[in-house]
Image (cartoon, rainbow, N blue to C red; front, top):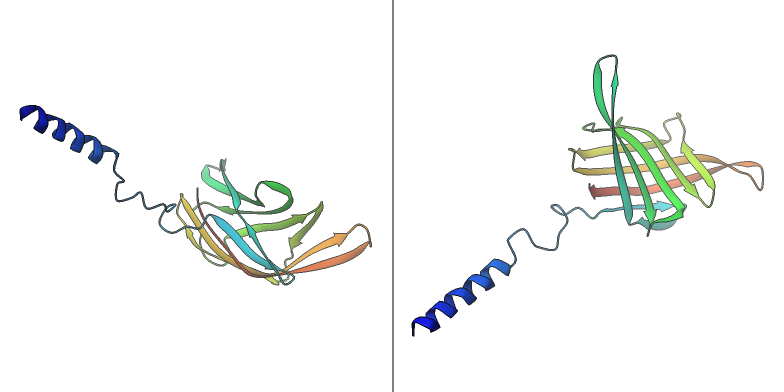
Length: 159
């Protein structure tokens, strides 16, 4: 009988030690989707591979950390969105550059207020932002300026 209870105790301990904890819900940091979704010229595109690089700089005694975000589709470099902002900055003026490269052609936002972004979370481990507006580029084939319309852009990533 003692052997039975000992085996039951060991088995119960094994089961409890391998059970899922309350934070093993299959999520990724409190609901983050770890993707960037945007409608570009009417086509909704999901960028599901996001890299956030952190670089720390010191300038005139002030130290700051810059976030460089790169989003691709399955790691493929034919469509890339890149943007930069300072760690911790939120609000409408947080993003200081934004570009979209598709098959070798790069489009940038202008300084004519035709592109807007709002960063709502930027806390050192999670970044959420909405964005929309016009990007400008140059079509090397037609040798003409080109505009791309971005709508309903969102990013939510844990890094």
